[in-house]
Amino acid sequence: MTVTADLVPYEDALASYDPVMGLEVHVELGTRTKMFCGCSAAQGAEPNAQTCPTCLGLPGALPVVNAVGVESAIRIGLALNCSIAEWCRFARKNYFYPDMPKNFQTSQYDEPIAFDGYLDVQLEDGSVFRVEIERAHMEEDTGKSLHIGGATGRIHGASHSLLDYNRAGIPLIEIVTKPIEGAGERAPEVARAYVAELREVIRSLGVSEARMDKGQMRCDVNLSLRPNGTTPLGTRSETKNVNSLRSVERAARYEIQRHAAVLSSGGTIVQETRHFHEEDGSTTSGRIKDNAEDYRYFPEPDLVPVAPPKEWVEELRGELPELPLARRNRLREEWGVGAHEMQSMLNAGALDPIVATIDAGAPADQARKWWMGELARNANESGRALDELPITPAQVARVTALVAAGDLNDKLARQVIDGVLAGEGDPDTVVEKRGLKVVSDEGALGTAVDEAIAGNAAIADKIRAGKVAAAGALVGAVMKATRGQADAARVKQLILEKLGVSE
Image (cartoon, rainbow, N blue to C red; front, side):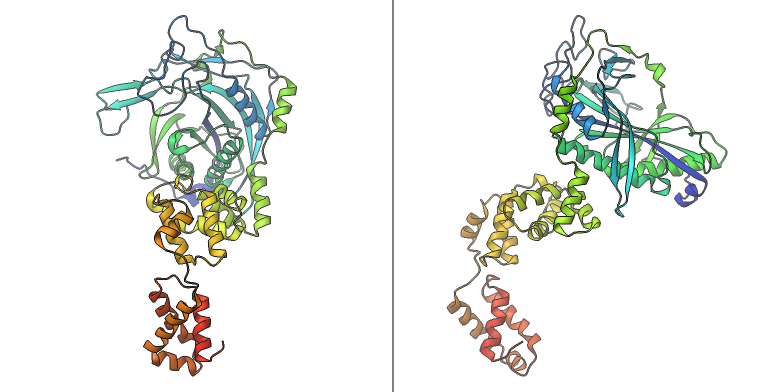
């Protein structure tokens, strides 16, 4: 259990101080092999099964640059409105820690492949905030340390550590913002919106799944405060490896309150890394933050510089997809929905499935209804993402077609969806197996209506006397008799016709 420091109320913190943020996002590329060797980059293998002399840093092993990794970096840079370097090189970032067996990380330092860009992000109220991008550079991931013993799973208090180098050498792109100023009280919201929009951009490019829950995208939240009305930047803290959108927002908010508490009491902010704790949204000290000179960067002598031809860069620019913000604005206009509803679809991970369902033939309103209703409920209850549900957009489109044709009502359609999710087959197969078609035989339906009227004479008399609303009880009786497989609107129409009443 973490100990929460004294915090200044958020409103009081903003009354005295101006927050400045810097966000560093690491994106794990979806390449087949690692950045500098031919080892598989797939997840889930036995520890240390995907290693070789190069990624283990053995003497005499030489790296070779992953061409797909370079191409992915350029695509990301272009999508973030960056300039692409005509010539750049790798550097060695030296540090002694067991997660990197060669004792340095191959990265880029003063010569990144992409620089000076921006990303426009849309906030909850529909306003747009521009985040300036300092750089996007290529590097490799480190290995994974598993600390055994102790109460926290961290190295402090552990009896020993296990090391898995499968991840050492996985291609990463690190995207670093310029200082984010002017957000004021909305700074935490801006941080969350930026990471969310960046994730959508990365996914649209097809260079990574950018799943934060799987470590494919991680954010370091740098934050400092300065007294209102002043310009020099304050001392920053860096909350490391925050792995969800909600946590990015909570980490920024907590650090604003913590910094304000320290500064208002006459204390000094220590430049350090900090750990974020999901259980209560707090952060705790990690280690004193190193400066660039502490890493003793120098050019990597075993790798040639990267010099992407202008023609290739322009070819990649021409292949960029419609970017997420422009796409959402277009869809909003086409669908006639507001910014809040669009944001809800995005937050739920429903936007792409909805679009695919529409492409498969479903009306837009029906696609939104099923993905944001029944399917979102099922995903929430089962603890899965929408795109992990065992149902395809084409199958959802087929359900909407059966409803439109009158073969299903909404209640039966929900049962069909349940059957598809349970692995009983496609919608038509589930309908056949479960016998779920709407009762459309007028004779059978008329008989059910006659029986409902005969069994509820008092209610029938009320309807004849003009109380049409009472027909709902007879509709319910017919629906019960037909196991919900009648068209309720048609049932009501038949009831009124047989009783000689019009609405």
